[in-house]
Image: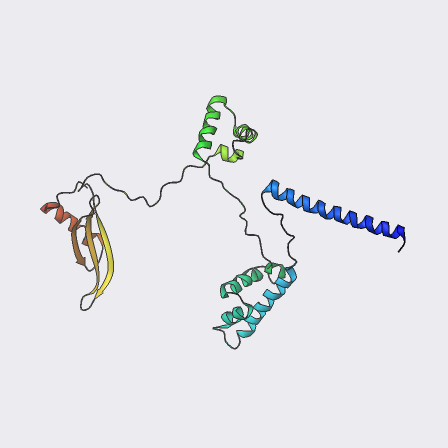
Amino acid sequence: MSKSSTSEWKSKRRQERRRRRGKEAMAYATVVIRGKTPKDPAPRNGLGQIRRRLRALRRWEMLKGSDPRHACTRAATEAGVHPRTLKRWRKPLEAAEGDLNALRDQSRRPHHITYPFSQELRMVVITMRLLTGWGAQRIAAECRARKISTVSHQAVFRPQEPKAEHNKRYERKHPNELWHIDVKGPFYIRGVGKTYILGVVDDYSRYIVACQVKPDHSMETAMPIPAREYRTGRQSGRADE
């Protein structure tokens, strides 16, 4: 090998090493700046995925003739998936009228993302409105420019109300302020039939004022129980409501 060819070969090797080092440096810079590793290119499994799913669906249709009850389960077992997954593949294919592109994985990203409007940001928006009289677009632009929050003018114009506290059990401050009726059942008793247990409970102390077994839980049947306890005024006292 001549000297010229040797020098060209060495030059190409040096360029290849520089190119490789540049790629490694860019990958390292991506990790440092973005805080995550660079993404690999998407695998080319589109056609193979469609073939595999279409084969499983055709196997399902083939097994329906001999064993319609267990056809889906058998086809899903052979394909290595759950029967619900097989039904999930068939639904978009039928909706697309046989278009095989419906067997591809679709994006599950929501169409609209609503971020919570914090109480601090709500106070900032209200303060800027009162002091400056700016509109929603100006306030949203100022929040982005001052790096307070990335918020849209729609959210500034109509801030979300704080969510109500669900499942918050009401409770009175003193005994006998409120009685309520709890119903349990139905219970089936031999020789009697269907029965219900109606209990009158004090809301503050959770004390069971009365408890009776009735054939139904209608208002006509339930209301005389607390009314009688209220009239007699036994050791549980009288309820205000």
